[in-house]
Length: 409
Picture 1 (cartoon, rainbow, N blue to C red):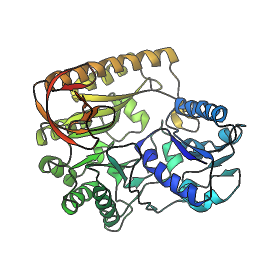
Picture 2: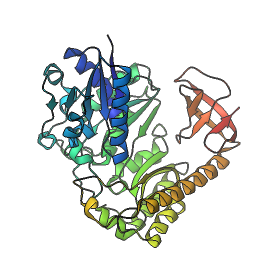
Picture 3: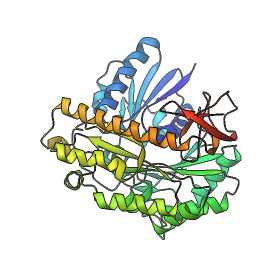
Picture 4: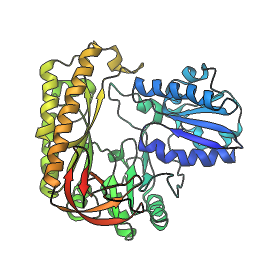
């Protein structure tokens, strides 16, 4: 009888699905489907509910256990679904004892979790690169964000344990490692000596020389420390791709979001990093249609794509999350929000095409993945001429692109 984990959302959830699989098995769960949910938008919750109903139709006799951020923030929503057998919180899902319990709702106070619990992961099923979770939770309270209430306050994996896990993953054959967390640039504030993310990056690069590539997940540019910038400038194995949590390009909207950077600070950071690492490529999260956003305010978010030189955009139509301050602010019409999101996506597609145009004719080191694609150092997707074993490095000349991926000889 199978034990399947269906995961939605971020890299953190992807990493934790392997711990869930192990903990649930140790807790005696069999013939079951675990749905590891995301709460970042109302659409993410809707998709989770939709998939739970589909799973019940396809697996009428299997137990369905719902966990993850949406289960933590709104457990009753899922407990009230007739398809669901159990609901577990984000801390409980990683503990085998919780899986052995049979209470319908096992969701504790995530804010009471104050220390990082290390769970070694030796492999990430279906992924060529490994994700190393070094931080969890968030101490900030952006007005649109429900995630701190799903993940709790910030806590960090000690440096020595992070290095040991990186070494273990490299020994398992992973050529690329992605440091991930909810707010990784807040790394270390809760640890003795308060090491910063840059110090952790340098330790991993120094102590795990067999690791070919180290990559960062989304960062908050205002928290980037001097060691991190130094590593970007001088460590070729730290990849030249940064995904920034920008969210908006207008200062008043940023203030209403309770973000800690200004438009000019975001632009200055991108300029500084580009001087240090000329081949860097930036991605960014941007929200379209935040409450009170005027057309002029939105235009500043559009302009930010060019002014920061953004390439890989993640666009989120604003979604009011119950319990957040932004949900109580004057809302925009949904049609306006969708239209602005479409305009931002169009801008992002144009920026990506410009980046792809500039890559044609250049030789790049590509790490192959499943499905006949690979990734350059800048995380740009490359469609291979023929399938290659995943996890292989190839030096390839970029011969063209299809608007989304590079084509290689």
